[in-house]
Each structure stands twice: as C-alpha cells, then as structure tokens.
Length: 600
Image 1 (cartoon, one colour):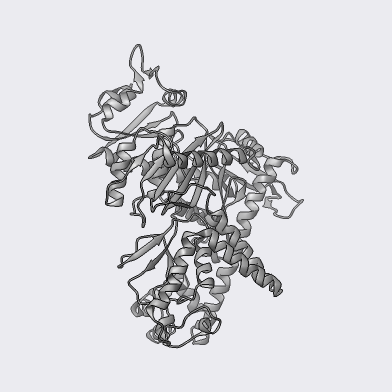
Image 2 (spheres, helix red, strand yellow; image 1 turned 30 degrees about the vertical axis):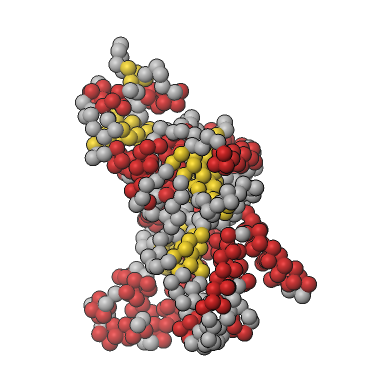
C-alpha cells in the first residue's frame, strides 16, 4: 500500500504534509516539527492501517477518507508554519479552517517633525521622523479624519503650503493660513493638540459633530446635517462601548474566538492609551468540526500578515492554544521586536477578555438566523456541495462586437452582496469561452491574497462549467462550481423572460427547476447582479475608449489605425506607456510622434 509506505519513509525533519481523498482532492494541510512523529500519531498500523482511536471525530472522519499523502521538508518549524498558512489560503482544503478577513486596517498618523504637521491615513509604517499613529480602525478612519479637518483649523491639503497664498479654507475659517500669514508654531500646535484630543476621545468628537449637525438643521441645511448624522453613526459603530479604563497609556490587541453549532466568530478589540478605540469581527462557518487552536493560529497570522504594524501591542487571548510559542516566534520576526501572547487570569486584562467574549456571544446570537440560511442549505443538498455556500463568487463577461471586453465578479456573503469585494477585469479574449477562461484564471491567481470562496456560480452552461473545473484542478484547488444558463429553443438560447427557462448545471447533473423555486430564484439573483456589474463596467470602459479614440482621431489618427493599435497593445493605458519605436514599428514615424505628443 503506497500510503503506508510513504508514512514509514517520512523523515524526522520539519515540514508540511497533505492528505488527499480517492478523487485526488486535498483534504488537509498540516505542519510538523518532526514529520515522522506527527503523521504517525494519526494512524494505527495493526491489524491494518486505520485512524488512531484517540483522534477527534473531525480528524477521524478525515483520516478515513485519506488514500494518499504528500510532504515537503523545510528548514524549520517556523518555515513550516508559513508554508502551511500559504497553502491553506490558496488551496482551501476541506478540513482546514479558512479565514477570509484579508483586510488591512488603517491608522491615522501625523509627522510631528514638520513645521505645520497635518493628519493623514496609512495602512503601513511611514519611514519618517517623529511619526505618531492612532488606530487601527475597522470602520470610521476616514470619517474621523474628515471630522478633524471640519473642527480644527489645520493645513487642509498636502499642497496647501506650497501655494504661498491664502485659499478658500482660510476664508471659511477652516485653516489658520500659515501658507501666507505669520502663524506661530505654538498657535498651530493648539489646533494639533485639539485634534489629538478628539482622536483619543470619540465621545467628545461626536458631541462636537452633533452640535454642528443641530446648527445645520436649524439653518435648514438638511443635506449637510444628514451627512454628519451618517458620519457620527459610522464613528460610533467602530468601537465597543466599555467602562474599562486603565487610567494609563497601556496598549493591547485582544483576540477571542467563540463557536456555536454552525459558525464561530472572531472578535478583535484594540485598546490604545488605556481606552478601547475600535473593534472588528468576522464569522467562520463550521462544516467539518472545529479546532480552536488552529482558529487562533489562523486569526493571528492573517491579521498581522508579514508586515510590521505601525503600533505593536501585547496580544491577549481568551484561551491557551497549541502554537502560542511558535506564533510568538513568528510575530517577533514580523514585529522586529519581542512579541507577547498571553491569557489573562485576573484583573482588568481579564475584564477585557470577558467583554470581548460577551460581544462574541451577542454576535453569534444575532446571526442565528442568517438571511437565506435555509435556501443555502437547500442549494447545498440539491447540488451536492461539500459545504453550505456562505460565501459565493458569481462571474459574467460583457462586450460589444469584441470591443471593451470585460469580466466581472460579484461576491455574496452573510446574507448580502459584499460590494467592497467585487472585482472587474479588462479582457483580451474575443470569444465567450476565452473570456471566461481569462476571468477565472486571473481570479485563481489571486487566491494567495484573497482566499477561495465556498462556491463559484458561472453565467453559462456545461462547457464553461467544465472549463472552470479544469482551471481549478490544474491549480490544485477543489472548489464547488455550478453554472446557470437559458435552455435552448430552436438551437438558440433566449434571454427574454417567458421564452426559455434557466437550467442549473453541476459537476454531475443538470436541473430545470420551477420558476417559483426559491433555490432557482436565489441563483438567478446572483447571476443577474453579476450581469449588471459586467454591463456597468463595460459601458464605463466603452465610454472611455470612445473618448480616447476621438482624441486620437482629432489629431489625424484614423479609426482603423486606432483599432490596429488596440489590437496590438490591448488598451489605451498600455499604449500610453510604450516607446516611440514600439508605435513607429506598427504605424509610421509621423503618427508615432503625434501619439507620443498627445500622451506626454
């Protein structure tokens, strides 16, 4: 038996191992300080190779499905941790926990070494002297920043000081005017101090905004009052209310994880200068059991990624987990200083953990009845999906006679369309098959940065479904895919309502459901949103192409020559970057000179 032989030949070295089922689908990726010892702990070898009796139900089920394995030897356990995390994010193994919180959180910062410093937003460390950072903020960073410039008389824009001339901001009393007036640094510092106080005290900030909102309402400036009302709501939403005050300048990053029957929630709370300044959370669907240690490891690795954060704080967690020491080693490398991960047992730090767990319980309770949960479960059953598709990506393409060819991906998660995760693509392919190949290939190539969903839905039939499965298989990713298209009448697909019904295609079957079927209506809704997104982006692209074409036409470059350029270079953006010689090799030197002058 090949699996038994592989297990017996494993080296006593650090590395990662991968388990596969009978169809070659990846079940699990694990890391080990000692591959031989770790992998052998899963198995008993007599009277035949089978799952060890001391394993959890989840792992036992996985081992029973395993028919083959691969392994990769690395230099250290730390290298194994990094490789394991990378493979999980890209390949979405069935039994690993996959977190999809790929965001980086913004900070507000100020460079106090400047004569007249101003506040701005960053997601990375700024290499400059005397930088102060505030954050991170899950929501509301831009609203806080805009509020500072509404309330405090600071230099409003980066280029203001260069003009040496008073502008509108001075005239409407939003800037002291140091660009032209002899404003002392002491006077300007008073405004910086007020802004700093408002950043640290959101209650004071929102009070000032409410006063301004009431003034606008009294002046019948209802649109401006409404904008401030919405801004206040977003700022207040960014933090968890708490009476816990350390009366000190202590910073902490708090992570807790709480699970229920169908999902877990990860809650992060950020304390800065002894006060809670923001929080965030995300849900993890539980399909094949749950491993708390793995969840904590994933949560910390994914949050801090591999970039040193602007503010480094001790990390507090609710429970001990297996890889605390290894995670401390990893984060110490990322932070470039000693990282600390601890489980508070008493005092105010323990109170922070209790507060986070209380909020986690409330979030799980709120999400008990996820919108469309029932129909998602019914779609899983109908299409024989490996998991309930809580996160779905739907694809469509659009063009007009091969011009302005684009692809679009829309994302549905937790009962709503996640518009921040939508993606659009400029495509080169001329036919529908090639366009979908290009769109899906580009999405697969981004899995390392933006992990796979639970399900892909394609606007197309069996041919495009097969194409998607081939692309995924060639990249080692097992992901559920379905397609939806109109049935063909008289060898022709009719999009007009009433003339033809939609057909759903899966790996093994196709379904023609009643038009009143909730499962069909749900999939149609996602398909229609992808179609809307693709059409909208196509129109925007076509308009831009038309404007660029007219510009060249006005300078004597004929439509035929413009089309020749686009066929060769792909887009106007690419054309703007090419050299004089590149263009003259395609047209003539006169035209090349004209085009380079236009795009100087």
